[in-house]
Length: 249
Image 1: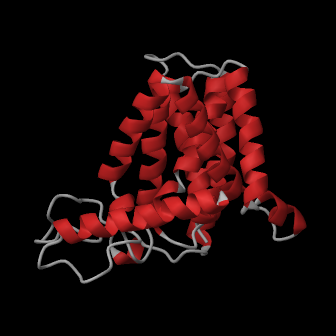
Image 2 (image 1 turned 90 degrees about the vertical axis):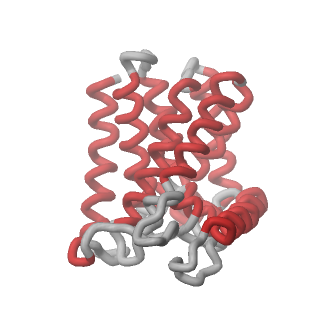
């Protein structure tokens, strides 16, 4: 299960994106905290294309419905853009929502909405924070505490409280939201590219005649989920994110 690892990489991505953009958009500790939460949640978003993923189960009927729509949209785009050289698949999991192009498009939409509307900013913060809570909580040992934290009512309420605290206390990551959300999704995609299956990194461009070519590093450098390289990446990011945020905020 890569959900906690994805969330950890997104957590660090949110901090680094905020730091990179700080010359253009000055950010304080609250902005770094909000961006870290949004990045961690966004790093789970690509898996909304799987019916049993952490993202799909994170907020009950809402994310279940979004997953249904996401899978149908991915299948439709795959059907319309595939070539004769592409493999015959249903075009759902690890297709449209696992492309940098989709991440950039969603990031642009989210950034625009968050900049124009405080309500949109709050909604995006709540939704991604809920994903972040569920994903990061899965790094805890199995038990009653983890089960409570990863239930969808709990993640929804925690995300609501965190959003009210951050936005109400003056966090204003609006201009950063698009960049953070896009980068969070992209680090998920890059993480999946390191696994055995790889992802369609080049879509919509053709590679060897295929628009949906599954691309990754040489097979010798890829790893299976749940093995030591994944844990090294996860814990490095979990340790680095607060340390970097503290130094830069």
